[in-house]
Length: 126
Image (tube, rainbow, N blue to C red):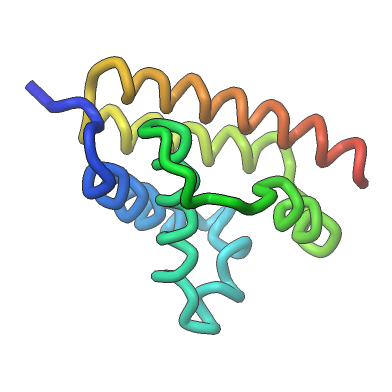
């Protein structure tokens, strides 16, 4: 039986495995080219972990606007519905492979909500 997400280390593990999948995905890895090219991947993963730690564990480390960088990127590298579907599939697969329980299920629900809201906001800013 897999454990539920309980600690920052669990989130770090999830984020690392999730991004490993995303960076191998031909249809969306181009969104991360600048981050990888500029050796900022570790820093980016830390920010993503801060974000999910806030959602899942109530941390207040993440104090950024999660939407704005995506809106900015959408201007030069447009996001499509398919990109969000791929992102969400990899999110759910990675979560299911590593964790189960209340927080893991909540993370998947929030990921769906985030993807939905982002798609709506991307359309209104394009």
